[in-house]
Length: 212
View 1 (spheres, rainbow, N blue to C red):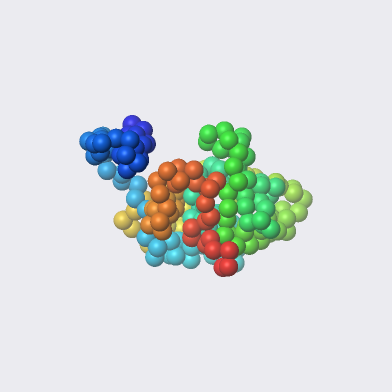
View 2 (view 1 turned 135 degrees about the vertical axis):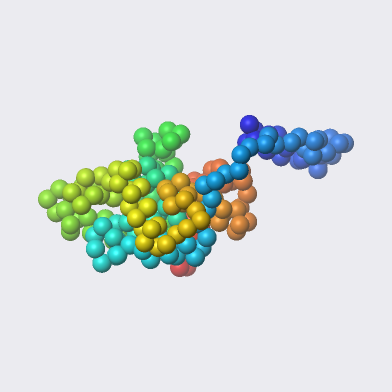
């Protein structure tokens, strides 16, 4: 309801500013009271602590580091990330494709990623080829048996790294990564309505400048 109300308030404010309405009706329209969001978001220091937690000298550690980096950089849903294939990654253009069959709304979209993220994902794809030469897996995020990483497996690994990093005061879960991405986007001057269209219409936030 509040999403619809915000849209209405935006329209009413525009009509008033342009002189079509004498009264500022937007100020009279109130949002519905809702319970406080308890998911929260990571602080930047906590982001750095989480990224430092995986042991990148091991396959599993580097895979986890790549997953954490991707989630922070794009705000992808965890299932969208886990169902990525090597063919969805375009390292040269620094984009990934979220296919319609894995997107929550059933619509395919192209997601921009930062230089560093593109390098990490490309390195992971190459590492998969070395690690699982006989299987030639298409998924990007794999278990140590070359099967696609499941939600439960990823969730437990994220919780593990959160514990190793000593993260407190915020829930260490896949959805917290989306909240963190959204928070940082808004703090850097983005607006709520373009945020709803992310990642299709914006560059990445954490690792995003093309000069990095």
